[in-house]
Every structure is written in C-alpha cells, then in structure tokens.
Image 1 (tube, rainbow over the protein chains, first blue to last red):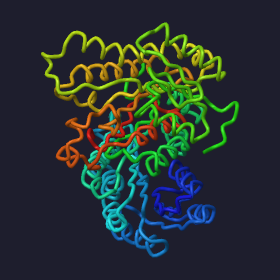
Image 2 (cartoon, one colour):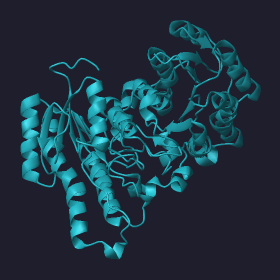
Image 3 (cartoon, rainbow over the protein chains, first blue to last red):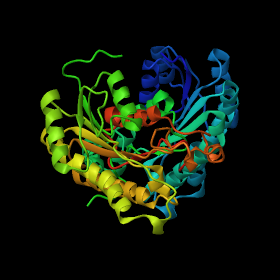
Image 4 (cartoon, rainbow over the protein chains, first blue to last red):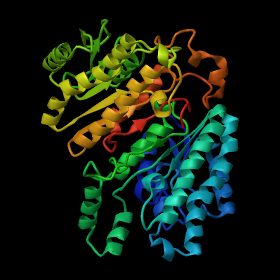
Amino acid sequence: MTGQVALVTGAAQGLGLATARRLAREGYRVAVNDRIDDGRLSVLATELGGIAVPGDISDPAATSAMVAQVAAHWGPVEVLVANAAYMTMSPFLETDSAEWWRHIDVNLSGHFRLIQAVVPGMRELGHGRIVIIASGWGVIGQANATAYSASKAGLVALTKGLGRELGPQGILTNAIAPGFIDTEQLQVDADDAGISLAEMRRVYAEQTPIGQIASPDDIAGAVAFLAGPLSGGMVGQILQPTGGITRTRA
Amino acid sequence: MAEVLADAPVVLVTGAASGIGAACVKLFAERGWRTAGLDLRASATDVSVQVDVTDATAVAAAVARVASELGRIDHVVTAAGYYEEGIDVVDITRDQWDRMMSVIVGGTVNVVQAVLPGMLARDSGGIVAISSELALAGSATDLHYVAAKGAVLGFMKSLGAEVGRTGVRVNVVAPGPTDTPLLAATSIWREPEYLAMLPLGRLVQPDEIAGAVYYLATEGSQYCGEVISPNAGAVI
C-alpha cells in the first residue's frame, strides 16, 4: 500500500517483532535489526519479504553500516522505529557506573547516532517519520530502574528537540511511552521476583489502572499510527498507551 | 468509500455539521462506520439530530433516538464548541463566561451522562472529548475558552479513573490551531509570523484531528484519561 522503507531496531522479539510484522502488513518495505542474527532475524526478514540488518546500535560503525545497507537495497529509510533497548534493574546505590553507561550507550547514544545516520536521507526525500520507543518509566520514573528510566527520559527530550528541529523539514519525530507489555521481558521479571509468569502478569495488571497490561500488538498499533497518514498533525509528542499508570491507582 | 454494513459500528459526533466534528464524521464514514450527528444545524450523517448540547433533556432524547435508530453507539466524539478571542480577562462578561462554560463543559458533561450508561451496560465503548492545546499551556485574551477546555481535561481524566476498570475508554484530543470556520480570518492564530514559529509551520487540518480521534476509537484500548495532541508542535 505505502511501499515506504522502514527500519525497526530490536525486531527479533517483543514489540519490535510485532511492529515489524504490522508495518509489513500495511505495505511497508521493512528492514529488521537486532544486536546479532541468531537465526530469528533472517527468518523474520524472509517472512516479511524484507531484509535483515543485524548490528549493535551502541557501536557507531554498525549504525552507519546498517543504514547504508538499507539505502543500497531500497533507498533512504523513510520510517525509523527506534526500539532496541537494554534494561536491568537494581537499587540506585547498587547500580554501578558500567550499568549506568550501558543504559545510556544503548538506549540513548545508540539511537542518537542512528537518527543522525537516517536524517540526511529523509532530508533528501523531504519527508520522514521517526518513532522513538521511550517508556512510561521515562515519564513517571521507577524505583530500582533509575538508569533505565533516565535513559528513556533522555529519549523523551530527544524526541521533543528533534520534533522542533526536524519538523520544519517535513520530518516528524514522535515517541511512545508504553507501560507494562506482555513480552519476553515478563519472564525475566518473574524470575527476578521468584514468581510464575502468570503471577507476574497479575501483579502488573493490578498495578495498572485499567486492570490489564498491553500486548505487543497494541504498541505496534501506536507505531503504525505515528508512521502513517492519520498522524500528520503530530510532532514532538509522547503517546502514553499505559493503561493510565501516570496516576497511582487508589 | 468502504461498504457500510447494517451492523457496522456507530460513532456519535457532537458539532458534526462543521469543522473538526464534520471531519470526524467523514473519516469514520470512509472507514465503514455508521454516523450520527448532534448539532444546532443539520449534519451529513446517517442520523442527524438538531439539538443544543447545553440542553441536557434534549441531549438525552437525541442520544436515545440515535441508539434506537442505529441500534448501538460504539464511540462518541464531543466536538461541539465555539471560540472567542481578543478579550482581556476583566472584559469577559458574565454572559460570555456562562455561555462558554455551558456549551463546552456543560455540553460535554450532558453527552457523557447520556451515553455512558449504555456503554457501561455493554462494558464497551469509547468517548473522545475535544479539548485544546491552549488548555495545556495557557493563553492570553481567551481565558473563558481556555478555562472551559481545561475543565474538559480534568473531567475526562477523572472519568478515566472512574471507568478505568470497565471496558469503556475515555480520552482527550487536544488540537492545536486548526483551520476551521471557528478561527476567524483575523485570528492571531492565522498570522504568518505565528505560524512560522510552529514546527510544522502551518495550521493543523481538521482531518488530522479526525485521524487522532479515529486512532483512539479503533486502537486506543490502552489509553485511559490520556491526551493526544495533533497540534503542529504548538505545545511539545
């Protein structure tokens, strides 16, 4: 339908995977990225009729290489979905400097460089959409996830600054700050908490005002909105499909 | 134009005869929805009811008529309103204040109270209220309008808290300066110097507001008392 070229980082699983599939279904030509190709990425690329561009986004050489690879195949990236992320949780005083920098390097600096790599192509075309996956925790904060939350808050400010700076050139930057999502991360959280996956889902649903957590498809829908024709008036905005977590439930 | 099926979902739009309301009607109809309009004037909808939204009894009757003729009301958009600018706060008359509150806050509340019981009984449905970016960041010489739109924000956020655990979703779209008949030709929001400062460099188009409303109606199940801002970058 659109034929536009999209690049999705962190596409091997979770909401990156759901997003890549959704965009492909809507007619985008989709390039999928993840840190390494352990087989999943190339299988996905084949499924979507797209291409796999593995590479660690915290590596500056890798980011420019993946954008060049997409451009050589289809031309400039028109829609960038900046989704890849690193997350660990630890109490603030037990978060060492290496952990802090790993969050900043991947979540914030990685996408800073990746966006620098795609913008010249978008400028040439005179249009482009940058969809940044931030986090609800980057808006409201989270105990024991200060490094992660700070890196995501950095993405919120990056979104707003890019919205202002690139908007006049026809490049619209917006972000999504999701709450709890039913992805593979839930099993990690369940293991950390020493409870079952089902119990983990229940705990998170209970913390969410609407009483349920999001599916990856819900967030993929938000990406499709921000990438597509219905959101032409949106720039520098942060969508919050969080089930209402901004306010702690009474 | 999608084929409209007899059991297609129904959107009820207030202020459906012009501007943002009319753009919502058009987009939902294009996507196969059946449409109902509440407006002082006739609207290009499947069921057009001419009614004043400040009249709670008349609104309740209009909603009952739509539900009866179309069989269901899946989504509601409260877009009825008007705008006045260029009035210093001390010059806002009691009548100007009361009328603004009555149409924008009262109209929204009247419609919500009329449609909510049916939605709660079915445990599904959605309501999107049209507020304004002015209510997010304030504005000068249109304080009665901004105060009314701010009240709509508070009302809808609280409604989100009240119905959050049900299948009903209530949210807000806060447009930026939009190219509708409500914005006078002499409006400060149409001045080139102002528009040049916006990241998009232009007014928002009514169909861009409708796009955000349609997204919330069709894929908005995770939003609860949220505000979506198609505002050309007026408030970031």
